[in-house]
Length: 194
Image (cartoon, rainbow, N blue to C red):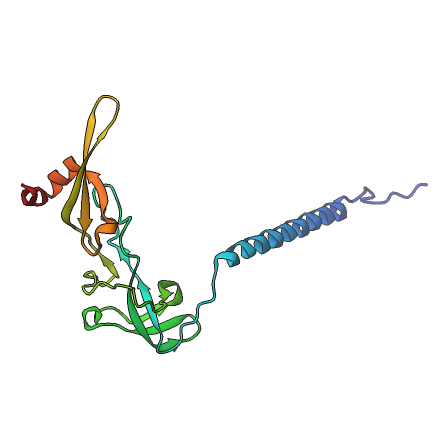
């Protein structure tokens, strides 16, 4: 009489398990390689910033969020204001600044990514009147005057432009804007020209 062995079929589960483990190991290895590559790319742009107590630095500001200046969103707005003195280092990545009374409502501790080193230059001309900052460190720009006019000719028609000087900027940072748009939004600038 022959003996019958129950469940004598070949078991595929060890091979499937081995294949799954190999795929997981390969995926982890590729993730580590990709993370290492991304880290090296990011570290090329990153810089270690340390600001000494008593040194001067610039503070990063941004134009009013969501406010567009006739289709242009702060392209020539000052990115940094200051210089302000560092009065205390808080950890490795934050500094406390000596802000003027005008910015008393703003918290005076900033992350190093919001700061830029100030290198003293005797010819460096700073604005005496800094922009009016809101609590969220943003400000609004407005046109001050028209410096020049120009007509650009395209094939069949001419487009009039005006060179506009903006608040908190000098003449070198003036921008060319469409004359029609400026007349519509700021007619008082054209009354001064007449």
